[in-house]
Length: 352
View (tube, rainbow, N blue to C red):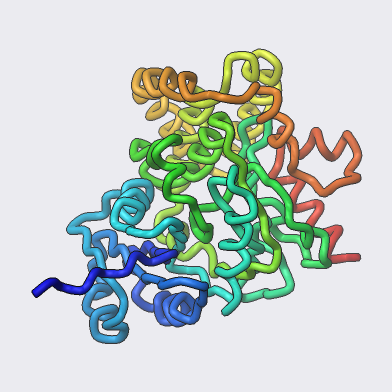
């Protein structure tokens, strides 16, 4: 007797978690509430948790597929496990600290189907505890090599309500076309955590893919739950991975044209780290990047080999930090000191 064929789902919704059992109580119900025109699979990737997460998921949500990793392999590696474990055309990658609006998924599916050249789609993330304030409206990588969340901290006044192409999507809440990984490759596991999604977006752009932003796909980001546990490690990884990102993915012509922006930005980071008492973490991160540089330069050759677009075309997206109509002075400030510029813009938005 032949067994019935297992239907292939249209979307896999993969939630990555590490010692975040209590966060899943808000996240998983919102993920299970998603609807699409095909079968959905919800998958939890437990990245070596020690707080009883796996048992909690099995007992409370038996319909959820669970992949237990014996150790914390890092965000990048866990995301890769999620992609490999999926059987669907589309894969949503989600952090454990994001609550989704019931209508989050459908607009992103429609966006990827309407734009076959797009590798990813993301929506408007609002802050969980301040739901009128934006957390991210797509990812931006500036020509200074600073990665920022577009619109972070601004009041949501409709300024990001237009569907459009953006530089990339934050892997904390985004929908990916699985076949794009065959071209772009996996998330770089040497990054371990932080900027691995920006690195992937840069490679996707160079390979000729686009990323879509769909403002009607709403999520709410709790934010900082993992970072607060180990701020020093977060800072080291951020600073290390920024240098690895430059060495691995930035075309030579981009380095020539905009190296001065990167130098100013890194100098300002150095000054700010000394002011804030974080100089030891910064220097430890930079030292680690230098040790890892030979490997990054070897992977650079693979990035160059798959490039299908001109570096200037990618650079045109990398300027998209401040809203349209922002003057040149503020645009330059975004390039070299994006945290300061976004804070100023958010304060101006609050006073509007």
